[in-house]
Image (tube, rainbow, N blue to C red):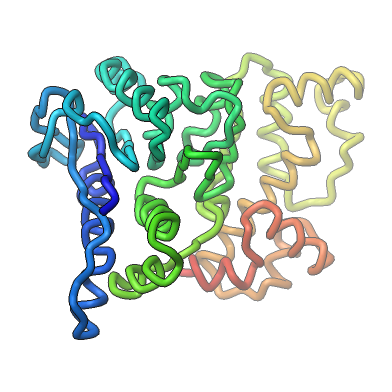
Length: 324
């Protein structure tokens, strides 16, 4: 059997611990029982914490650890769950875990993190120069804090060598299914997904993201243009007219806009329009053709390409998933 160790720490998501524990423990079990076959479990799963302390999760549930992490000499997989509490506080309170992450990384165990759990891997140094993902809402702070990591925040899952990361807080089942497939093959992963009525291979998390409008900078001219764009994005806009709004030369304006927002003006406008289109798709019965006109586009095919580039889905696929 493969040995899976789930790190437990205070302020973690309980579901990212217990949910992953269930999926691994029941791989080769639930489907077989439903099919009238003898169960063949593949994983021995344990929750491990510092000195085997109880884990006080963010939802106030207290979990009992099976073993002290200090006593785990070897494991095939070390899984770090989602951080549910205030990020920096939890990181600072769990510095003792970093040595154990490094130990098992050095022993060539698979190391996996869910959502904000990637911050603990980054703090341990095992993500340096590697691909990683985390929740899209933490992408900016992650990139700023760890510039030597190749963050792929649009992806639901990344795998780079023996390091695996998943994006959203509830993406633990995407991660678990990926790892079940890694150890046991596609058939076991598929039957596990079917038994628990969950999708396998959800792809990207870009469709779930919302505009992270950079307004915390200290450039009042660029802030004025951002607010003007938010009120006028559905009209015809010439990029050349924007510098004149604040009496700045074009080259200086473009440089300052990119520095303040991390986007070019054209990319910023596209993002505003895509976000507006997403809201219309979610909340109205308007046709896609009408929606693209409402957000400032005329050509359906070019808008569809742009929408899919930003969200990973076509407008019709997005409507099927998110329309209320």
